[in-house]
Length: 180
Image (cartoon, rainbow, N blue to C red; front, side):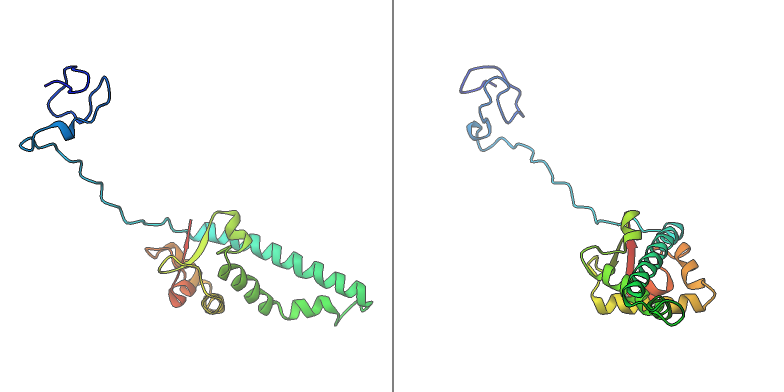
């Protein structure tokens, strides 16, 4: 077979001339069948789930950060107000640590950060089961359910090491995933 443009010899199943680049498909008679490449089927995306120890390290980072911020803020407010000692702003932040804990985790997980600074530093995201960002209500529910994990002698956290998608008890209850 020869190219109709430049006259060079080409193989029968070629689509283009190797010399001039002419499209040979439109020059072929209708009786010649050219194989069409089959498209590769899209694979289902399977995320990599964050395990127990990586999540534990993120928790330590977040607790250090949260404690430091609350102590710093309490110290500044006590210095400005002049009320040092027992019953000042530092104890106010300490007494309501659970509220600050819930707000810190829930706000970071429900915004475009999709995770606390500790999780983000380790490359983790908190998502719902559909792979979308958490709503503030779901993030609050997830973090409130962490109390059950604490009360159950930390078993709720430990099950993140055994479940298929590495979900802790609070993730199972709230329908969430922590992915890398």
